[in-house]
Length: 355
Image 1 (cartoon, rainbow, N blue to C red):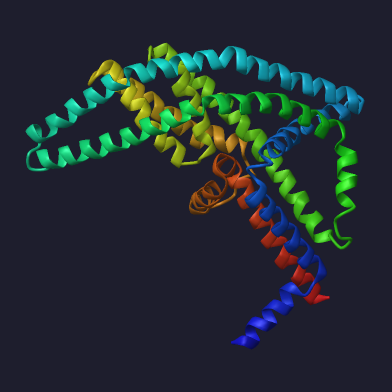
Image 2: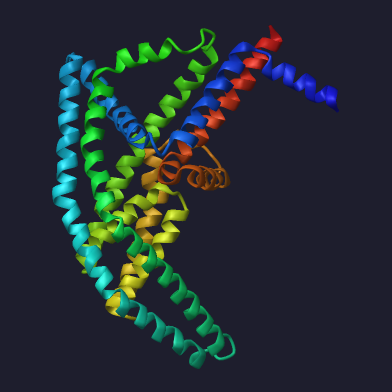
């Protein structure tokens, strides 16, 4: 047994390129794990610059100088950020405040509805079970209120952090874009010479991540816009808030769509009760998710996501648990990275073994 393990280790971990690739992956993982909180503005700026660099390179391909293309893309980024801050945040804050004001009424209606179940279905549900459910919900709401109070007490500190981020992140985005060649040259000085396997893996992953992020951003915007138009046309309350989270739910395949069904159904029931309008709202949301999963997502991400649903859900659980929102957002690209590393690793060693 020990001989088999030793032979396997000698076969796959004796090549210098494999060792270098493993060391680079381990170093990146450790930096994110232990310095992720402190370097969050740097990582956010790096991700945004990475996304904007594709637009700058597209302008360069039509003979626009690098500095001019960077300035144009950066100004577009600032304009988009300004529109979001000035146009979107007031609407969202107003709807969130309105939702918090009406939350007690929503809870009361839900409690009354639950108390009717033992009368209608006494052989299935009892009064004791309903009281246990209500006690559990009450306890969770109490904890939620405590968290909200804690956040409100720390709101000044959070506001200062947001202001610092709003100044720091755009500045770093510009420098990452403008000094891309200098930064890459400086970083390469600290990397080992035998990194051909790492470069091969990066080329595959870079293409996959670029296509995935571009397609996912378009999917979020399209689902957000279509759901907002649908909810607004139907007269559903909190249309902007619900449509925004419906758009963001596509970041988490399968789970996000199921999770957002409850808020849409609860708001629709609170507004219309058991009526045709309630049924129309729920059916419209289900149709929207079906079209997204079976038409829009395959169209935008064709050839990018070729993983089994079980692998996608496992990647979401693992990377979301490790890195929160960013882990959820990049769960599929990170799973693609793992797959590309394994595929290149074993292909490289088969080639070396044959030679």
